[in-house]
Length: 349
Ligand code: FAD
Image (cartoon, rainbow, N blue to C red):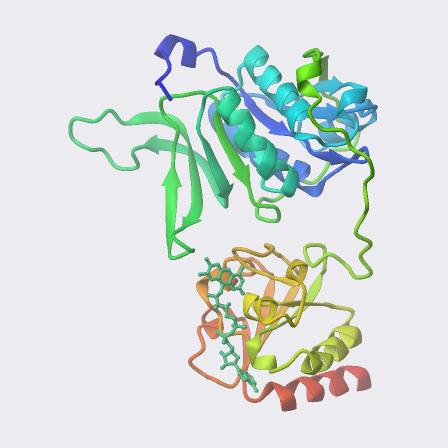
């Protein structure tokens, strides 16, 4: 990837967000990215633009404005009804080539992980995947003799080497600077009722080349439980729970307090619970009001997904377990005794 000319780079302005929608409903990540984009745009004295791609999606524009978009670029075409890699890549890459944003944020969802890298390759720039922190600053972070330190760069931070280190990455020689961002990490702003955005309708045109894939049928996964990312109370179990059957004591506690059961990766790897209940670096990032960590040691990869919870309560028989370093309240003891006692007390209250 060749470095861009400085004059060309200076044409790139504004912070753009891919406003993911499914079935004409905006995904939570769209609001989270808008919240972060507002912070970045304030530092750059720039606007926030949402890019809304779909079919019959214009009705979503006001919602994007209420959550922080100054402008909304709408690419509306029957070809874009359901997500397909090639038409969406063509649409977003065309918007970037036409409007030249300085920063483009995409959610690290199943759709965003497919779309982001293809778009970055198409527009010949870099992409940092699965970011957990984004800020504007100098790069390199500290001056290096003989090397120019560039200002107002997007500093993109993400776990690296299996979560054992945190890497801060920049894209100082190309534009746009692109990142995919983990769902659940950024904070959406409180909506401003009645806020309006400038709306730009853009038609990139579709050719037969953009129709490699035809969708025959969409089979939806019908969940009978709350998504752990939306739960206010999580009762999370680890390997210490001992067996899939013994999760019953966590389910009883969850039921008593109106919570939802989640788990560590060790539990998923053992086949005790499905992957969509996994909290952590390779699972979901959660931010509930209360997080119970029961029989979970507190490995860095687990903590990365739950440390932003408002209140963390750990139950573990090992008083030196690292989970106690991040817990607000800790109980040292056997979960098989403590959890049923707690459930009984809550039921009596
Ligand atoms: P353990 O580490 O085995 O801990 C079990 C705990 O239960 C111990 O602290 C023990 O003292 C306690 N215990 C046992 N019996 C009882 C009892 N009767 N009463 C009370 N306490 C008891 N992990 C995740 O969770 N999420 C991730 O997304 C994730 N991603 C990863 C990505 C990479 C690249 C790698 C390398 C690892 C990842 N891991 C992840 C795995 C992580 O490193 C740990 O191995 C995992 O979190 C351990 O799960 P655990 O705490 O349930 O099990």
